[in-house]
Length: 208
Image 1 (cartoon, rainbow, N blue to C red):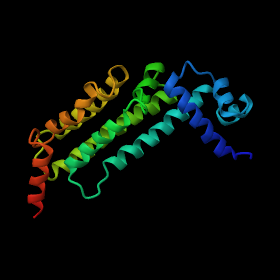
Image 2 (cartoon, rainbow, N blue to C red; image 1 turned 60 degrees about the vertical axis):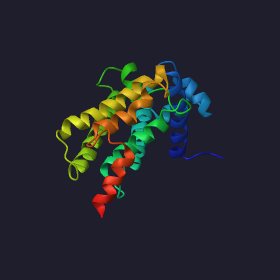
Image 3 (cartoon, rainbow, N blue to C red; image 1 turned 30 degrees about the vertical axis):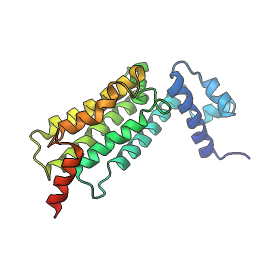
Image 4 (tube, rainbow, N blue to C red; image 1 turned 90 degrees about the vertical axis):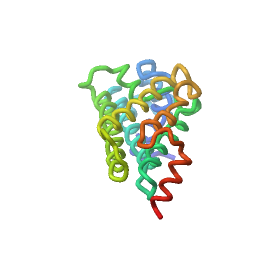
């Protein structure tokens, strides 16, 4: 059956994601993306004017999916803000398992395309900026119910831990230093070192 143009575009982006993410963007040519998508190069160029356009679309879609993933993991659904932050790092631990991850796609884009005037690079930077702003919002929620000495510094620290996980898993795996991320975050948060069970008990008592 013939696909609609929008469906073909999504299919091409699915294929491009697998090829670009696991093999590197510069290592994969447009002809290979077209071939593995089951379409001709002419059809691909009707959807994306150039490889730069394809890479930008790949990066933007990855950013949209990342935002959805992290927003769902840390959603304001009645949990204590501390638990929502820790849940983000629980989700991160699952995301960076070797079958799912070889590193951060946005750092990869910036490594291969350091020119920040390129659309793909700008999309990667925008995703990183969103992540930092999301941590800022989570810390603000935490500061509304717990004493946070320096909310800006804490949000920066959380972003740095996440970046450290992404930077380390490619070489050292999810059982290397990345495995310590959640425990480190628990120490950074108010009441750090008290243990999650103790903290949960204290929060339950406060709610009575």
